[in-house]
Image (cartoon, rainbow, N blue to C red):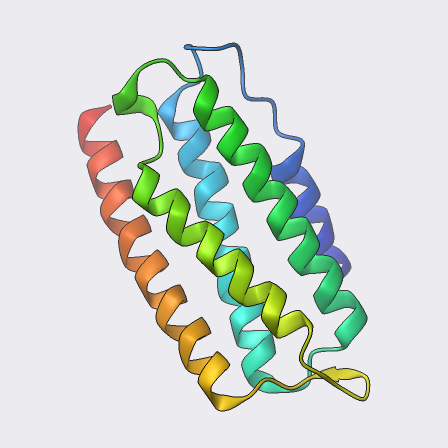
Length: 142
């Protein structure tokens, strides 16, 4: 758990450069990190063994890291170097679903209803597919 918090903090505090000169691989790495974090959080929610307090902290760190990524993305002047808007929207949807999962507390553990788990898993699959396509496109244009 401590390792995941440190990873999120590393993603959150990564320098992004000045407006217009942030290289695409940097944002790609940040997006990759957030995709991995959301995947791990979905798996933790599915396990019904995730302790509520650390899970909520990780969800908050995910949301704040996403916020930083979106702000960095706005500073980039060249459209081809930005993360596509539809991908960011899907990451925001994932953040909202993870927040809902963080509220599903039974005792000390996160236990989500089946419908929410279906939505989380579907959103994570969508994000992973979009990310793979984005990575292939970004590496092909650099």
